[in-house]
Length: 126
Length: 470
Image (cartoon, rainbow over all chains, first blue to last red; front, side, top):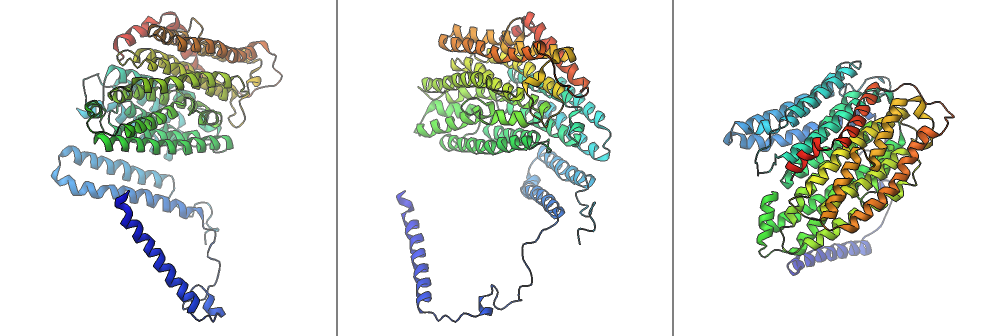
């Protein structure tokens, strides 16, 4: 535990310095609040509407598909770096992974209608 | 070379993919999908690798082959028992079959794995499939509740397992069982407390997957709510696989010097608690699936009795005999519960079985045989399993465990025979629903026949088991 002492001291110092700066500006800074100044983005567009709205569930499906295929492609980077120096077994297993995970997965999602986000409720999604 | 070792896993994975893709094309080919998957299971049974001496990260021996056969038998029973199920709950059959096949792949890998990394991956593979399938009946809140409880506790269990593996790796810098046991036997400047913590973490995960008390709390809720034909699989195949891994893991941790007594106490405590809690709480249950869940906890307790001896050369054989009996009778009993009750969205009350003995004579007779076998009365396979376990316990000086086991078997007779009482000696006052899946009846009657035949001629299998299972 002793070797972590400098880190704890550093973290404590950071908190103390930040606290002192916030305290000084709170005590000494001028306070002239008005409506525009209190909006979240003082210099940007005025807020038009509520930011939390209901989103069609189809978008979540698309997002899920994206995550799945994205994770699969992440696995391919280390394989692509090492496959040149390794034997046929590694090459075949990598290809099998691509075929099973990506091609079969894509086919399944396509045949199930996972990309068809207007399916059934076309007038609701506008 | 390596490919032929993994042939059953490859066949089942490919069958899962084919079934999954075919199921999207048409919704009217349910029977074809079940035919493909059952054929694939049969092919996997045929292509099980011949036992060789591989001492790497996979073990291919008579023992793993025997437990693989048990797993695939449970798969076939479950597949035949769930042919009508998916249309009953208006869910697609393709995903159900595919995930079931992949769960089997995970269990088969788990059986063979003698490396912690492979073990963890295989455990996650089948656990995730099991979580999904418990909650497959999305119309039923009970099903979702069971799946959620199993998933949350199972996720914690996985975290404990990876922590235990990390501790062992940190102390020994190995992940293979064999290398770990050499490193532990050398016992250089190792932190023994950390190894104790790690092994207790890993043991608790294995006990959790076995639903052994005091890690059993998920099992009644999960079994009660879950998809009934699938519970036939959940309650049998993973338990037998985890028992085998426990059998193979105990020699590793016993390579530490002077720890036998310490682990003996742990396993003894878990065995006694499972037998007592399972049998006593099963008495209280009104729902037959909950009752079978608690009886499953008790059966795990019986299966743990031989392990208490920690006699690494011989303790696997009685466990194997009991696992064979347990897999056949328990999975067939759940299939029959599904056949008789039909509706999975209501509780499966024991009192609703009144008069079934006269309405479905064959189903009720098979259920009676299976329940007698679960009780452990001769001439059934359940008796042979208990006989081997108690004989082994007596031969190794575990008189107290044998007495506890026998006394609580008598307690267990109470709740199993109550079901038979309702089947035959009560008048029915309400109509149960339409005819069920004929394959359920077929497969569970065959299981009941097996239970009786092997109960009369146990030497058909037990000779081989005693010779070959280590």
